[in-house]
Amino acid sequence: MAKLVYIIVDGMGDLPINALNHKTPLEYAYKPNISLLLSHAAYGYPSVLGKLAPQSDAGVLADLGYDPVKYSTGRGWFECLGLGMQPKDGELSLRVNFGQVAGGNLVSVRTFLSADELKILEEEINSKVAMPVSFRFKSGEGYRGGLILAPAKKALSQYVSNNEPGYKVKFYKNGSKLSFATGVKIKKVEKIKAIRKEATYTANLLNLFIRKAIEVIKKSEVYKKRLNNKLPPPNYLFLRDAAVKDPALPDITKNFGKSWGAVVGMPLEKGIAMASGMRVISVQEKADLQEDLNNKGERTLSAMKMFDCVYLHIKQADSAAHLGKYSEKYAIIEAIDKFVISKLSRALDVRAGDTLVLTCDHSTSSELKRHINSNIPVLIINKKFGQNRDFGEAGCKANHLSELKKATDIMSFVMRLL
Ligand SMILES: [Zn+2]
Image: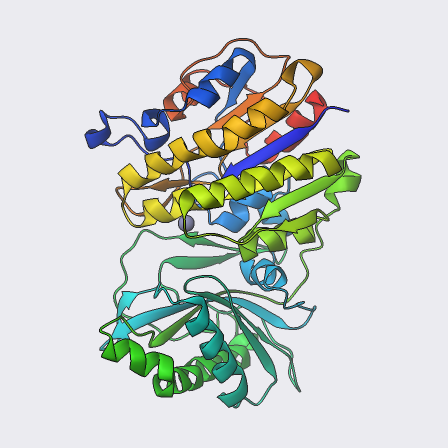
């Protein structure tokens, strides 16, 4: 039976950069293994969410065939699910960032902490923060975490703002919820606000949690040690994308009649894979790029033996772009070609019908250091297609399959190839 490997590289798309001869990092990257596969290649250049700049939740959902506007109940659900926190309907699930403020102004929404520091803060927050409702907090990777509040006497509401200034919430008539990178540089850190009256109680609870958690953090050894060692101490929590409902994604295996495995390390992507009914092959995100990609490549090869389709998520390209490091971004794409695509191209039998998809959840501009609303480059390797060239944004824009208008079209199109 023909196999599919579907790779989503976080934030791979970008804009042309003068210092890269007016090429994007993807166009500029030396990618000999991808080039070899282009003898049977077609391109797509779909939009993810029209004029809005998507977050990864919307992008990954769309790439996997789920219309985010129809299904998303808030990113917090997937984050908490992926962290192993087992969110339930009626509970309020949120994504959390450890960050920094000074004099009420934003310094950073990402204060990177070690795994040990995160564990200590997680334990202290869970044991020392006293709230009128029960809650559970779990740390994730780097500066990330998840928070779940359980309802007590009153229902909890999703109609609250984010206090993470980069992302503005949008509610849809059907009750769906997404948030978008605004691109507006907001300095003043604001409290969480109720967007509907019914959410006043929830907003108050969240602001109380933030205040009490900050008190606990500031008294912790982690905070003091970092001050002593002249490392930035986390002194604020940024919460976003509160969800109160299971998004109830239709099972991907039933949708298309194929078994799916997911090689994923980040909580959000893990959560989306779990919610879609994929079997998750959990991988540790490793700090060393080569080690990380080699590991993910190997895990994908073994997953191919067990499943018809394998979804592989690769994070680093987005992180480099957020930091404005375009040279690092193209080097990451080169490393993906060298350590992941090389392995997969040996294992995939394109002549026998095996298929490879390489795309991203959204574009992240390395110059603007944020997500943008550009269409995304999509590469599809399948025996039905002929020779193609110049895989990258311009190549995809110039020569793409007209069927792929939206990112949600990719999955059904690819499934028809198998
Ligand atoms: Zn991003």
